[in-house]
Amino acid sequence: MPEGGASISNTTQGVAAGTERPVRTPHRTGLLVTFLLGGLTAVPPLAMDMYLPSLPEVTRSLHAPAATVQLTLTACLAGMALGQLVVGPMSDRWGRRRPLLAGLGVFVVATVLCALAPTVELLVAFRLAQGLAGAAAIVIARAVVRDLYDGMAMARFFSTLMLISGAAPIVAPLIGGQILRVTDWRGVFVVLTFIGLAIGALAWTKLPETLHPADRHSGGVGEALRAMRGLLADRSFAGYMLTGGFAFAALFAYISASPFVIQEIYGASPQTFSLLFGVNSVGLVLVGQINGKILVGRVSLDRVLGIGLTIVITAATALLLMSTGVFGEVGLAPVAVALFVLMSAMGITLPNTQALALMRTKHNAGSASALLGTSSFLIGAIASPLVGVAGEDTAVPMAVVQLAAALVALACFMGMCRPWQARASVEGADS
Image 1 (tube, rainbow, N blue to C red):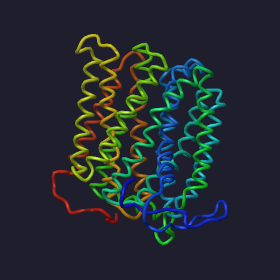
Image 2: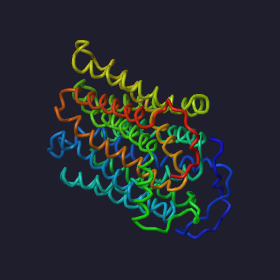
Image 3: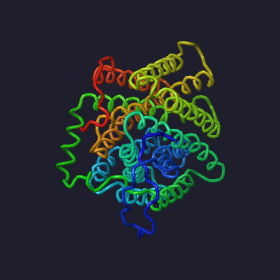
Image 4: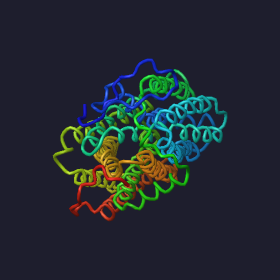
C-alpha cells in the first residue's frame, strides 16, 4: 500500500444513512477504500470495453453503419468529458460523497435505458446520458486521491489504482464476449446495470467524506470558472493536461477501431478479440506497477513520461507501416504485438501525467481533476469517429490517428512542460 496517505479509517459508527460522514484522522488509506477508488476509476472502461465486442452486432441489429454505431462510443466519451466539468466544481463546493452518489444513481438509470433502446439514435442519446452521469465516478475518485495524497505518494497511489482499475479493461471485453454467447448486445447493458448498483452501494456504505468543510468553496459558477482559469494559466499544468489528453486520444483510437480491425479485417471472433484486448490490458497494468513500485522515486516522473511517449510513437509508427503495406501482407500477430507495446506504454504515460498535473494544485482538486478528465475525454471523443472515416476494411485511419495524437502529446510535453529545465518543487503549491 502506498505510504504518505491520509487515513479514512472507521472512527465514526452509526452515522445515519445518507448523511455526510466526517473527515477521518490522517494516517493511512484503508484497503477497502483503495479498492473502491479503483472501482470508481474503472467505471469508464467498464462502460465502454464491455460493449466493444458487441459493436459489429449492433450495426446489424439496429441496421446502422459502423460510423454511426461508433458514435455510441463518442457520445459516452463526450458525456463523461462534459459531466466532469460540472461534477468536479460541485465536489469542491459540496464535498465528494453527495455528487458521487447522485451521479452513480443516474448512471444506473441511463444504463437501463441503453438496454431498452430501439434505435441507434436513442442509443446514442442514452449513452450520452450514461457518460454524463458516469463522469462523477472518475472525477471524484481523482479528487479523493488528491485529498489524501501528495507528491511521490500520489504518483504511487495512481499506479496502485491502475492495478485495480486496470483489471476492468482486461475482464470487461472478456465478459462482453461471453455475454454474446448467451444473449445479444442488450445483455451487456443489463450486466453493467448490476455493476453500477454494486459500486453505488459500496460507495454509499464505505466511502467517507475526504474534503474538510473548511477546504470547500462557497462560491458559485463564477468562482469555479476563476479556479479553472487559474489552472489553465499555469503553463505546466496545461502542458501535462494536453499531454495526457492526446495520449488518451491514441489509446481511444485503439479502443474505437480495434473491434473492427481485429474482427472484420483479420477475421477474429469476438472471443479472440476479447482475449487480445485483455492481454494488452495486462501489459498496461504490469507496466503501471513497474512505474509505481520501481520507477517512482528513482527516476524523475518527467523522464519516465518522455520514455512512455517515445514508445507510443514507435509502436504507432510500426502500425502505420504495417497497415499501409510497407512490410507486405502481414497477419494478426505482428499487429497484435505493436498494439500490445502501445497499450503497455500507457502504463507509464497516463498515471504520470495525472500526478504531475495534480502536483501543481492543492486546493481546487475537483476542478483540476475535471479539467484533466474533460480534456482527455473530449480529445478522445474527437479521435473516435476519425478512425472510421475510411470504412471498416483498413487499419490506416487508426494508425494515423494514433501516431498524430502521440506526436502532438510529445510536442505539448516538450514545448509547455519543458522537462529539461530545473524547477523548484511544486508539490503542495496552490493553483
